[in-house]
Image (tube, rainbow, N blue to C red):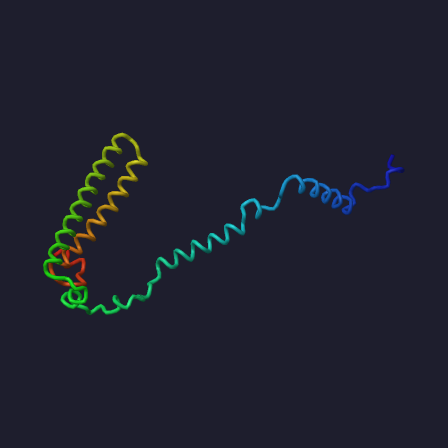
Length: 165
């Protein structure tokens, strides 16, 4: 039988030919390119976009607003520039205080709801209500800080001034 068989089973050219035929058949059925499976081009472009967004979040932005470039403006100058009377300032002061109280009470209610959800073992609702409470408290702080600045009649108060006030 070996006399009539002219192919040598150990011939490397035969093995390569069989492998290439197998690859062609399997390649037409199954895509063996992993970069296509995971959509490498899409991942690269979106990774660079996320990196750009994250980089811009942590970079200091230059102020392009000409009204905000003058940091040495005092309260009376700003009051004259905006045309606000003392009555307007008193009304704004009450509005800011009222809004800070509303947001603070909303935040407290959300914290109680989060506590209730913790006892009900609804972790997702608890986490969401805690996040909303933090959002409400941040608004309460900003409105109270503005109230404090109008009450003190001083622009550019610091956090320490607010705590001491």
